[in-house]
Length: 285
Image 1 (tube, rainbow, N blue to C red):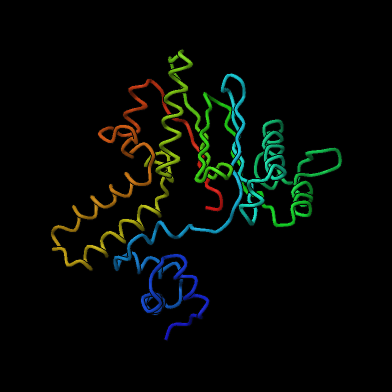
Image 2: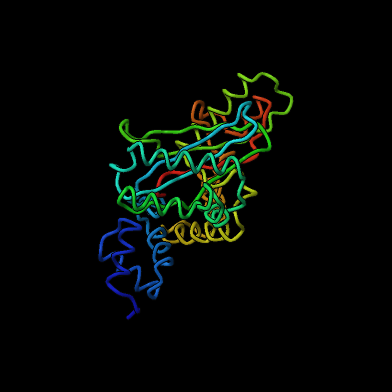
């Protein structure tokens, strides 16, 4: 019998939404390895497994700052335990102060940000710890993004009208020969809203790690065999499913939200711009 615990079964159920017996069978097949068990359930056709893997109960807010002229922008996620704290003015003040500090100091990464001085003699980590004490619950800062090498814009989305934005997107365009600020603002907003809604993981196919593609190809083949597809049809089926993975996860391959007959890449091309990079934060995810 595979070596796993009741906690492993619970974790797998939380990750996938599968039933207890299915989770136990998957862990048996995977010899107790939870990640392999998730793969096993995907192959066996458990619906929505991949989408449920990143769910979390964390609360908080995403805040943004955009420089005049859209020459740079900042996106910060600050997390807390309850929505009561998240929608309070004191929490928002802390989040906005950190975003301003990121904008002013351009830290290389989160550890550098936390170690930097936000007030005289006070690091960002100390500032967050102070907020923990003041607000009475755990406050966490673990990611931010700053772009400053193109036309930068943002979109913030509220999942509930009484909460601060829970989803934030930062995009950086290479506007090329486009001189019309309104046109740049329009396409940037449209693409940012698309990203907020469809949550791509990668900008293009070139950004997908080779090991991820290999894994998706293997899962597609194993799934097709499990479904009883004929051997001679497997290569075409696998290729189709891998292309489906690209269309779901790569922004430039995705059908555009406002016109699903065109890809995002096509819409950008027609607008005369290219997308250099993007960041998408959903609180707790």
